[in-house]
Image 1 (cartoon, helix red, strand yellow):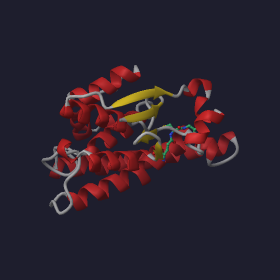
Image 2 (cartoon, helix red, strand yellow; image 1 turned 135 degrees about the horizontal axis):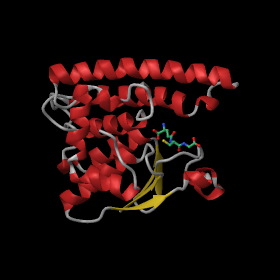
Image 3 (cartoon, rainbow, N blue to C red; image 1 turned 90 degrees about the horizontal axis):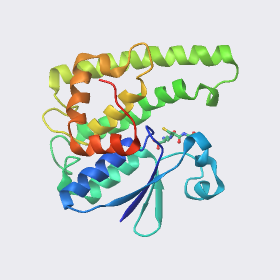
Image 4 (cartoon, rainbow, N blue to C red; image 1 turned 45 degrees about the vertical axis):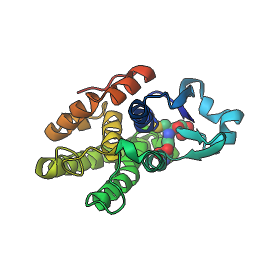
Length: 217
Ligand SMILES: N[C@@H](CCC(=O)N[C@@H](CS)C(=O)NCC(=O)O)C(=O)O
């Protein structure tokens, strides 16, 4: 039904875990996961750029040839196509506003700050300027993790409260991206609890195994 193009540890992590979870729910294999080897720069190959002109992962193929990209949009699309998996609150549900808030916040704030750290060269020229940008990204992400840790402390155990949704997969994916920073997301107590809870979900654990990556806790 789906093809998901991924690189290990990339922005495809959440969508791949969701596809596993939906597939387990339906009792069927739902997708083919296609490796785009970023060590060989395959995301910039002419064949892949025909699918995703930005040369980034993930890309999702659905309905025998329709193509979409942007990880948060793919996650949202999957929740809408498979409401039975309950990976998002239904339209009209009391959690819906918060859920949409977190999906937007995660993709446009911590995800973007992570990009400043991982790919400072895409934003500014010069080694010294890039080092400053990375330091600022670390500082900003530490503030975001403090904030989100507080949200979960007061309203957890998940981002929207009692119910697990796709935004929790997305957050745990972003937390992994900060594993080499001075204050990685998983070192904040409630975020650490969330990472452990999400890693205990078979769909997330299978994604980590299939991608050949580990998630520090
Ligand atoms: N906003 C995009 C960002 C995707 C993105 O930056 N993916 C990274 C991997 S995490 C990538 O493919 N980078 C390769 C490159 O920019 O050359 C999304 O969320 O899908």
